[in-house]
Length: 549
Image: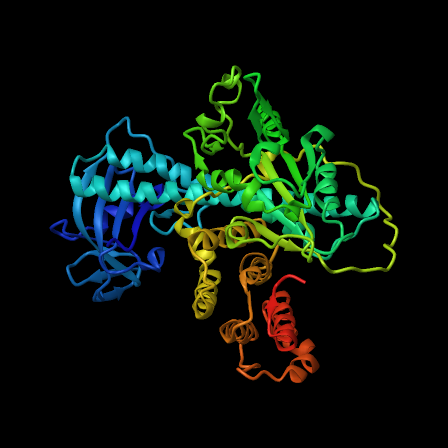
């Protein structure tokens, strides 16, 4: 494997002296060692002397060169004179002649490391690419062409990474400013949400267009998406809110049905899809209010399946399989109007739920497919009056909200490195969850990783804080039961998050309650740690526990 490929240019002032620094048989060339501080044995170096019309294709040779300084010159072992006493030697593999029409842009830094180009700016990198193309015209030797192509490929990759990073940084700054603006807008409307809740809602929507807001009545579950939509400049017809009825047993009240007269009668969700598809650049919200008054798996089974068929088209648009099957449109006179209904990438489903004895619990099928945000914290103090009044945003489009990743195969090597620690923590959690057969699979892993990656790339949350939200929304809601295995899972997770054994199979609940503040302060995942302590206390009281209050 090539360690480095270096392109070095001898500038005009030193061009004539360079002629003296060949060995008598043109086997070696000598130059100032200070110009190649990080040179390693067998690195390839292209030495360009445009004034003298030659390019040396060389391999470095860093062995000690015997020299003897006499007045201003240096005599080498092979009788080559020079002006420096710190010398490196290059083995000449090929001397390439420069034609008259050769184009060359002088290298600003006098040295270009093709495989290590971190210290060169974008403009210089692009100039180096042009020069590499010029070097390729000097020889048809396969070794030289291959090395230069590798060099070129690495520089192009670095340019892409830097430009992408600059774009990401700008976008991250814009998103951060947008979310602060949204939070201020919502507060001036008289509503307050906990720190990070607006950011979490945004990241959840971006991760996947299906979010569940759960909690006691009156905490702002319905207001959060409506006010968020208002703050980002969405019009009223971009937000559709439908109350779920307890008697819903299939999708007909939501999607539609074929009437006795032979026409397909569309319902709110189908109409929302059609509306959203009219302008894919604008986000649309579909809010299902009190969605667990009926069994979600019964009336929403079609959506739960369709959302998992997302794929990316050649034009980079995200689509799904068709929502309406042929048998649903069978014999409908107007079937042609509805035979290509798919879930568009600018339509976001937000469900609000109350978790009490009057509603149905969620199955794992639902929990695995959504971010379930618990909204039970209530602050009864008056909101301090905002000094600053802000208007709705006018430059927030679906490009800010849509998913960048829909499958783990789209993650780059750099992306994976950024979430390496989060993945390791997920592995440890899954091992503990296996005790009670509560472990998760690839879908949950991918969506958690996407969330953490968005939070990091857009500089919104620290990785630990992002993972804390995801544990609360994707992992802990699946933990429930009355068996000792469930208790072991809770204890195992609690010790993992606290990074020490603070509970055993016979937990000292009095100790946990007394030292809760210090335990939460030490934990990297305080929200999840606090919830686990609550679940453990609940298990002790009732011999049953669950995530939901």
